[in-house]
Image 1 (cartoon, protein in one colour):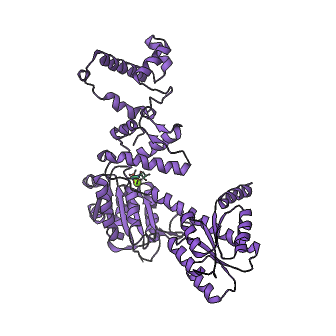
Image 2 (cartoon, protein in one colour):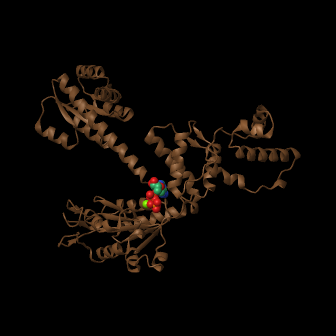
Length: 477
Ligand SMILES: Nc1ncnc2c1ncn2[C@@H]1O[C@H](COP(=O)(O)OP(=O)(O)OP(=O)(O)O)[C@@H](O)[C@H]1O
Ligand SMILES: [Mg+2]
C-alpha cells in the first residue's frame, strides 16, 4: 500500500518535470523527446546553443540534456552559461567520442552525468530519473529550511524589536555571557537561539537546559555528567550538558529557579571554565558560551537571598530585555500574518484573513501570555473557523468584552433615529451576551418572536453564531 502511494506521488512529481534537449541532430532530438514524453516528462527541444539558452531562460526547465559537439556555440560553453543563470541546474551531457579531458572539464563545471552516443534508451531514462530525484531532494530540503527559518523568525517592526534585533546582532559576535529577562511567552528562547545561530559557534551545538524542570538532586549530574555507579541509579556514564555544548552554546533557561547549591556549582564553571563529572576525579576544560534567561526579577530574588549576587553579576554581562507584547502592539498585525502563514503552510489550510475589526480587538487585548498566547489563539481560530475570513464575532468572548466595556458618549449622536438604534443595539448585545448568544432563548426571555429578533439584529448589523463559546475565560498565563 505504502509503496504504491509513494509511487503515485513520485510519478506525479516526475510528470511535472520539464526537460530541455539541445542537440544539432534532428533524429536525436526526436527520439529523446519520444522516449521521455512516454515516461510522462514535459519535453522541449532546441537545435543549437543559442536557441537552447534562449529557451532555457524562457521556460526554466528542471533538467537539460546537452550535446557536447555542436556547430556554433559548443556544448561546454552552453553548460557554462546555463550554470551561470542557475547554479542548481542539472545538465546531462551527451558526448559522441567521449574525450576524458572534456568529461573532466564538464564535471568541474557541474554537469550531472554523461550519456554516450549511440544513446541507450534504458540508460537515458535511468540518468534522467536520477537527476530528477536529486532535484526533488534538494527542493524538499530547501522547503524544510524555509519552514525552519520561519519557525525561529523574530517578527516585528516596532522600535523595541528593531533595537532588540540590533543588540542580538552585536552580542552574537562576542563570546560574552548574556542574561535575557522578560515575561513568559515574550520570546526569550527565540532570542537565545538567534544569538547562537548568528555566532561563530553556529555549526556546533545549542544545548538547552530547563533549570526549573530538573530535580535538585539531579541538577549536578545533568549539568556536569557522572561516572557509572557514582550514585544509586547511575547505571551508565553520562555526559553533562556543559560538556555536550563544548564549542557551542548552552542555554540556561529559567536560571532563576536553580537551587542555591546548584547556583554555586554553575558559578564555578563560569569562573574556571572547567567541569567535574559526579564521581570522577577528572576535571575537564570546556569552551562554552552561556546564555541564560529568566522571567523572575533577579534583583528581588537576591534581596530574598534566593539568588546569589555573584552569580547574577557573572551572568549579567550583557543584559537583554524581551519586551512584553502589550508594549509593542503595532507588531500584532504582523504576528497574526506570520502565524497564519506558518500554520497554513504546515497544515495545508487555505489561507485565511482576519477582518480589520478582529485585528483591532487583538491590538486592544492585554496578552498576559504574550506572543505564546497570541500564537495559540491564532492556531485555534484557524482550526475552528471554516470560512476564509476570521471576524470579530469569531473571537472568544474574553477578547470581545473589552470592546463592550468601552464607555459610550450618548451625546455624540445627532438624530433621534441614531440614538434609538444605538440604545437598541446596546440592549440586544447585552441580552445576547447574557443568554450566551443563544438567539432562540434570548427571544423567549425578551418576549418577542424569534423572527423579529433576527430582523432587528440584521438591521442593526449584529451577527452572532449560536453556541458561541461566550463563557470562555482567557487561558491562565
Ligand atoms: N517576536 C516573535 N516573533 C515570532 N514568534 C515569536 C516571537 N516571540 C515569541 N514567539 C513565539 O512565541 C512562543 C513563545 O516564545 P518563547 O518560548 O521563546 O518564550 P519565552 O520567553 O522563552 O517563554 P517562557 O518564559 O514561558 O519560557 C514561541 O512559539 C515563539 O516562537
Ligand atoms: Mg522559555
